[in-house]
Each structure stands twice: as C-alpha cells, then as structure tokens.
Amino acid sequence: MSDLCGMSAPRLSRRSPAIALQTPEGLLSAIHAKGSYLCVGLDPDPAKIPAAFGAGVEGMEAFCLAMVQATQHVAVAYKPNLAFFEQYGAAGWAALERVVEQIPSDVLVIADAKRGDIGNTATRYARAMFEGLGADAVTVVPYMGRDSIEPFTAFEGRWTILLALTSNPGAEDFEFHGDRPLYREVLRKSQTFQGAQRLMFVVGATRPAMLKQVREEAPHAFLLVPGVGAQGGTVEDVAQFGMNDHCGLLVNSSRGILYAAGPDATQEESQAAATNVAEDLAAQMRATLEAKGLV
Image (cartoon, rainbow, N blue to C red):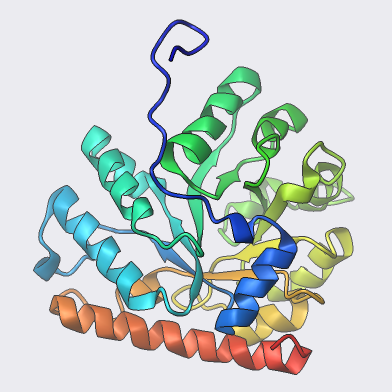
C-alpha cells in the first residue's frame, strides 16, 4: 500500500480506539460508571522517576505501565506528554506506542502533543496521532486559526483539544490581550469550524473563577483541566465553576499522582501511593457528581 508520494503507508496502531468515548454522551457514561472524571497525566520525568524502575527508555516505559496499572480503575483518560518520549528519538516513540497499546480501550488516550500547523502538514500530524499512535484525542495550539484546526476535527470519532486558557505565567502575554480577550475569541470562533462537535478545550485549574467566563462561551463543551494537585488547583473549585449538566470535565493530575511516593520508593510503594492519590481525587469527584445528580 502506497502513500500519496509513493512512500510506504505509516504504521497503524494496534490499539482499538475508545469508540464508546467518542461522544459527550459516551464520555458521561464512562464518568458515571467510574464515578470519576480523572485524567492521569503521564509525564515521565527522568529526574523524578524512582530508581527502582531503571534508567533511560526502559525505566520510563516500566514506570508509565506501572502507573496505568495502579490507576486504571478510577481513570477515564490518560494523557501521555509526548515530549518526554520524543526526547529519546525512535526508541522513545516505540516505548510510547507500547504504553498506549496497554491502556484499556474503554479509557480515553489523549496525546498531549500541542501540535500547530496548517494544511497538509496538520493532516499528517493528525494521522500520526490518530492512526499511527492510536490516540483518541490530541492537544492542538489554535493560534494559526481554522486551517490549523479543521485537519484534526475532520477525523470522525476523535477529539481535538484546543489550548484556550492556560495557567502558565506567560499566558498573560497573549491570551488576555484585547478588549475581548483572545482566549474568549478562541472559544467562540472555533465552535463555528467544521467538526466543532469534536472539540474540547484546555482550561487551567489554577484559574477556576474564570471557568465561569469559559462556560459563557462554551456551555456544552468538555473541558480538559490540568493543574489539580501539585499545581494547586482543587477539584471542588473546578467543579463549582466548570461543571455543566453532563459533567463536561476531564480533570488532569500528573505529578501529584506519579511521584507521590518520592524518588527513593520501590516499585510497589510507587504504585500504592499513586493508587491512594488517584482514589482520593476520584472520591472528591464522585462527591461533586453526586451533588449534581450525575451518579
């Protein structure tokens, strides 16, 4: 089978996509079943991975697989940060593929790639994430506009997650500019694009009060909310300002779960600590869902 340029077609992932989670209703069903809207971020920082897992690519892969095993009973999504894998070149990408293939098909896989380009290049990025890696969703930088987004939303049954309101200090440089802040324009305008029903938006948990403004622009969309735990955001604040009638939230925690046991922990201690933190977050989430009548 040949590609458009006569080259071999890219390798397709062996992972089955999370078909049941490709609609808001499907996501809500998964959230209802687990009583949780937890997304576990897989950010395998070599400087923080306990030595018990080993070094290099092999240690990173073993650590990620252990974290998936420890948390999959309460997680509705995993968000591997591609940079940590890509730093190792082809070996790192192969490790990422193996990690993704071990994530259950009833759990969403979000490729945290933050891609941003236009036209044919964007289409190739989308194919790499959705067909090559087997991800169910990908994060995208929206600031080149419609023709950097629609190549991703053209893929039926896959989610495109746009950076909207981030929590980093540098967000002040661009996202809040204008009489009508740029982040609000991103939220408003992108919902007029083709495939907009397959959009989610990233909104930082350290700006919970601003979730009210986000919901004014995107009342029905799912929001991916990082920053709970190590970055200081709380489940209660996010739910208060960001939850809608179908939950509409995926709340991400990375460092707070992954490195809960510290750098000197054994593999078993690392898994146990990750389970405890994930279960505590899930319990907080269940309480907010119960208050909303969603479980």
